[in-house]
Image (cartoon, rainbow, N blue to C red):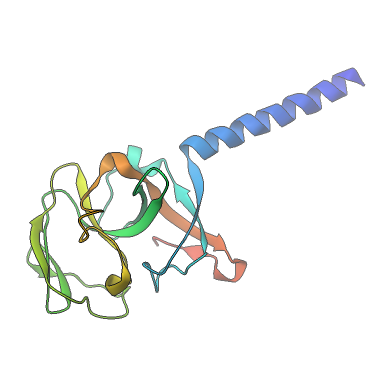
Amino acid sequence: MDGELWEWVKSILIAVVLAVLIRLFVLEVFLVDGSSMLPTLQDQERLIVNKFVYHFQEPQPGDVLIFSYSRERDFIKRVIGVPGDEIYIEDGFVHVNGQSLPEGYIREATNGQYGPVTVPGGHYFVMGDNRNNSMDSRDSSVGFISSERIKGKALLVFWPVDSVRLVNP
């Protein structure tokens, strides 16, 4: 019996260590808090976030990512501009490097004028999909997002169950 008990203890310990390592370095659960990413993400949906992907590639325009806003709070937004891109908003449209951004994921035109600004090296310009109700890179308290603040890329909505889907197909 002692051998069987030891095998159970080892199996449980291995499972716990693997779960902790996966949680620390690979995947994390994130709760959407608010309406800034409507219609793409709904308030209170739960996501799986890939914390590993940006060790091998840079965030790309269109990626939905999680970043640290403050020590106590994370934000989720869409990458609009990468280092070197010029961003401005005019007549309801977001422009990147002089081209109007095709944005099938937003419900309404973007209010106001903004920019032009150039995204500095090692930083990203992010916006919520609910443009007129989003605290994002246009806000001086958020600004450009340094790569060090990025926690990961949103992969999958898993809760509620009837809403399971990929975020960045």
